[in-house]
Image (cartoon, rainbow, N blue to C red; front, side, top):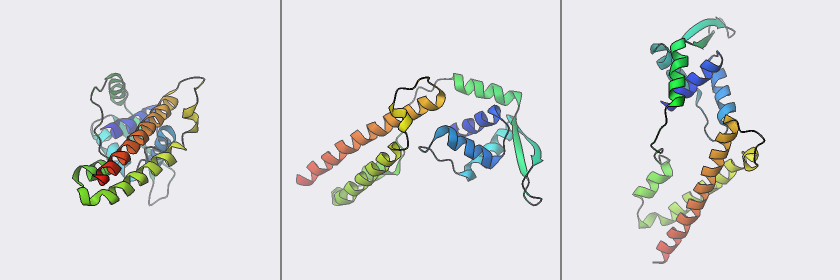
Length: 175
């Protein structure tokens, strides 16, 4: 559902076609959350079925594959305002595959888990390097700056947890 609302926000902001919406999403959200183009079209279909967007005139593309432009309806603009104004009290669950591996691993998997923790830490560090503007106090806070700061804070917290988990794994190996 959050992806559907994000797509709706992009369409309310400005009309667009599928791949353009993906590009705008990537520009807005940054490298921490890559949107698969194949996920946009089901979201657009769902929004259109609910009457929140409508297909506009076709433009560009080729004769065999014209581009369908989507525009928000007044109901879509109202739905977006409602979504943005409604707080969500529940934190997001930990759904990364790494956490499932930790949940189901046994003592014999310690070496593999250590390698996975190290690989995850490397990936977090690499992603952290893509957020240079979030490490300095911004002159003005905008949505992107706040999002970047949130991503950086979560990556740093993840790295701290990974270091702790790696240490715990080392202590378990000695036992």
